[in-house]
Length: 226
Image 1 (tube, rainbow, N blue to C red):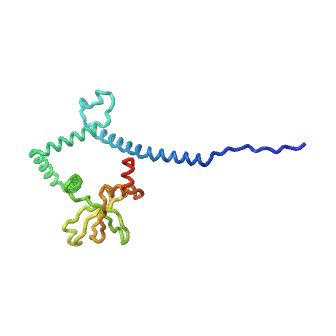
Image 2: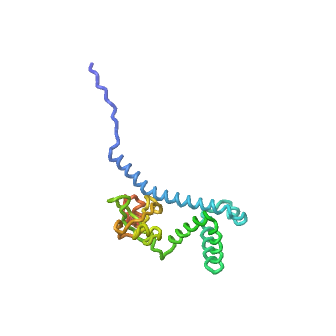
Image 3: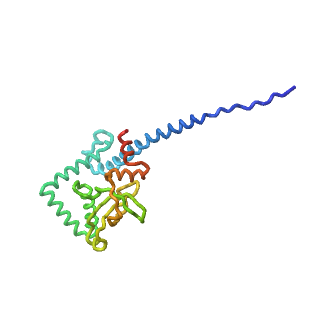
């Protein structure tokens, strides 16, 4: 009697094409969901932070949570916007400007506080001024050594006299850090170590934020849906 050979079970393996499609679908979903999710999380975190810092100062009778029975998201931001608008209206007249000058004179008498206040005020006024030439030009800077070029933003064409005496004709340039272009190193370089770029500061900042992986035009095209 002949023995029949034992048949091995047939293992059906998924085709590699299906695995590739599933992987591509997963990453396609990740590309769509990650920017939306991270943006929503950042905005929501900011709203929660402002609400937590502002709403506790509201009088109990003015707190909408006591009327509605639940907190109102974004109330802190509304209060901040309205408060800043009213503050701007107050300081726009003679009485408000006088009060600001009196406050600055008081702060000027406090050694450590006056230095911090002066620096912060100058930075805010520079960023808020439409007529300022600071941060208006994107350049390539040979930094930190010869043959190494990084994106920079011109901050001052006429540095302080103390710096100009030792280094005449130097230009102040902020070399940003990726992915936060607002942070970086302030360097003073001579004009021959600078190459102007034919792109706006906004486009150069987007290039820094993306670590140079994508061009500024590609980022703008992606945001516009093209």
